[in-house]
Image (tube, rainbow, N blue to C red):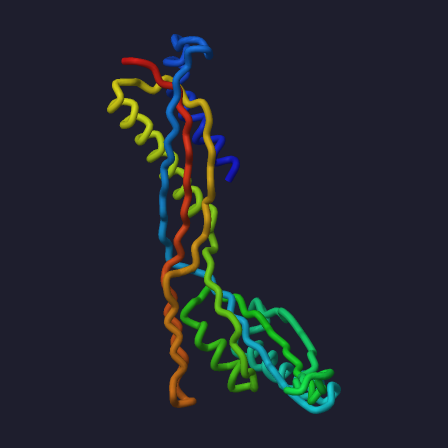
Length: 237
């Protein structure tokens, strides 16, 4: 991102340096400050699907062993469905006691234990997101804590948003200066805020009522917001 800011600044300075050669001294310098904003929307082309196995048992070792058996079955099923080269990684594991709290107060009582094991599957084929969920749940998974969408080439979208914001900021400076009977001599400073990735607007997640039907996932778009603030030197026309 720093490289992009450097390129934009260098380009604009290259255009304006000849004008600044005749500018007045710093003691009489006048300036205006403007901000340009840009939003670029893009369709995601990468997904991270987290599926998990949650087991409960009165004894911790039973919760752990039951979880391990089911989780191993889920991993085998995912590897079989998506191949040995698929990006499938264990994400998190936890074992926690379950408490019963008494209305009269006092120390809570441990009633059992809950083991949770989560695996993350990363896909570039978004049409197969439902396959991940269906394969995992059929093998015993009982939790889908997260589906995250991303862009494989985030940098190009960020660059576009920042470039558009910089161009709009410069256009704002020119328009404001003209309205005030001034001219822009040179850029004094550039401040960049973002680009910021904004989660998609909507995700349609429909689990079929019939177990034989496939789960359908329809992602929305990802937005990247950028703001560029310019401080420019101005003088009378």
